[in-house]
Length: 116
Length: 116
Image (cartoon, rainbow over all chains, first blue to last red; front, side, top):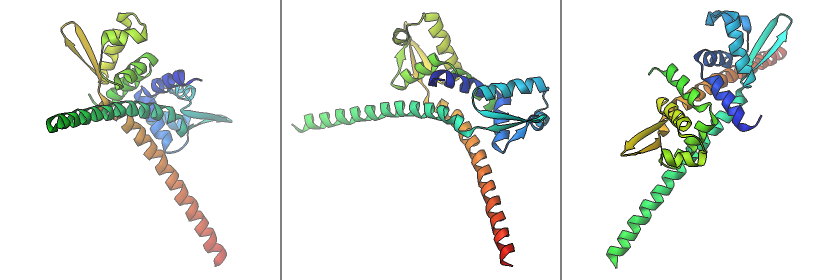
């Protein structure tokens, strides 16, 4: 998957409070689907829908062992989201640095002018 | 707005490649709507729809001066997204630390047993 559709899927997957709560739960350790169903007090089909969306985005892995499906978080899947946020910060910090340089240059020119 | 609906709106706003590109453009400095329309080669109503979504999420500010509407990024609006990612990282790093403590404890017990 190229970067852009992957970012779409990641942000989309994170744009729901239940899915974010599932991720916070799984950050504490892997859990079976029935373990997850209990605290979220949610019909199994809805829960499965959320899990599928998280798995499609690569944020969780699921593994079936007999009748039990276990879900685990994929911490490195968050990296593109962090990467994108870091790029944005670099862009606007670069702009602030250029603004600062410009102001310093103006001040220097003014000083030079008044000194001549 | 409480934290949860705000995070929903933020992640939702970021889940679109055009909106992310608009933010990257605005990270370089404020721009008018017609400035933005040019590189994105997009019908004005679609662009306005994206801008409204970004403004509703608090990621940009727009200001109308006569016939020109200027858009500016709101860098601090990204903070809840970063904050949520940092919380997740703290959760799973805490889990790794506990796992490590547990393994060290097991190793110590085994050493003590074989030493006695």
